[in-house]
Length: 391
Image (cartoon, rainbow, N blue to C red; front, top):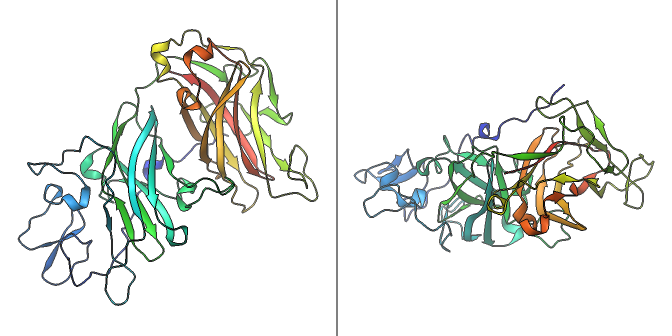
């Protein structure tokens, strides 16, 4: 039976959190509005009755400005320090003090079906509730909850955390990947920071990035076309199976992952075990020739693989701090961190080779290995399928 992933463009925010309207500075506040003010439904902001409506009349709602009042996007994708904060949660009706400041928000890389967004946010972990990244394929739609796609903690689990779990208290959550996008398409995004007082701080800018063009060439690392590539899988219980392959394929590789009492990974379930432990699922000894990948195409070349994680029972088994990479000569080159969701559904992961710290010259026309690693929950089943180098 094939397992498929629900397309994330079906995850759309149904409603925007309500707010208490302050007795001052009513212009530009989120609806509902006080007496004497009208709600601009296009921007969900309060306006005086003669102020007009529509995206073009409201710079506050979108962060999009133009000398002619149009919805043109600024050239820069870096946010100014100023932010928009919705005043909510104070029974006195006074605005809540800003809990966070979005210092910057922009995209730093993309593939045909994904964009990696990065930000800097100032604030305290104790005030944090969640991040949201709103994304749309037009500037006018990115601030409309009826048309924007909202990537939140239900889609990307790391967005519910201020500090990234299993990072040794070293990493803040400062990036996320929006995936299942269309190739060669321009996307617009805004960052929202929700706080424990009910406030919502938004990036002052709309960040813009295009996905890269659909690939025209590629080499399979392992999949149905090459079920037994040269080399060998590690650990030993990382095996080929037909239990739940990706999409319309027939086989995949899977690992039944267990932890020992000492916290090391094992292929055998122990009576007493640590709840989580690290493991790399990898193919070693590969000799995948990619000589046809020239230096000009290397910029767009990426590792792609489909991965699904079945956690045991009701455990929250996300791979919070995960890495994907390739082996080049005697060196492992990888990208991290990214979070791999554990909901039993396949997710197509795409990461540019350049983001792994390798170069076209270092590749020397060959890949010797491929891997994905994380701290997995004991009893999890991790499935990996259709690994490719594409460009």
